[in-house]
Image (cartoon, rainbow, N blue to C red):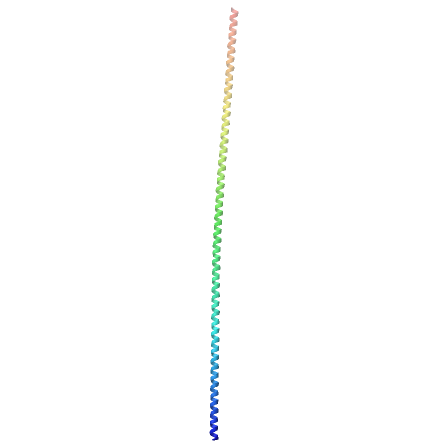
Length: 175
């Protein structure tokens, strides 16, 4: 009886031992699974964080690219505007120079015209003065000739009277 009970006890202990071992293995298995799941979860999270980081990085690079592009377009626009203003300024200056040049030419023509008119008036004046002198000279010569003729006439009259007087005297002496 004692042996049977001992066998029974031993079997029971072995069963319990096996049970404990089974439970221990089960606990180990569950523990490994938990750890595995934990590792996988951490891995997923890490990968997720990595993806997010990469996404943020892409976004950041994209924004920087766009910003650079905006800056470039802005610079180009400013450059174009600057060039346009420069061209307009040069155009205005060119027109201004042209206008001044025309004005100077016009003034020059005006001045030359006045000069020609002045010279013409001067020439006409000299011509008139010359004609006046000529006319006066002729007038003086005419007057001089007139006086000369008058003198000649009086002289002839005097001589004539003298001859007549002498003739009368001779006749008187004869008579």
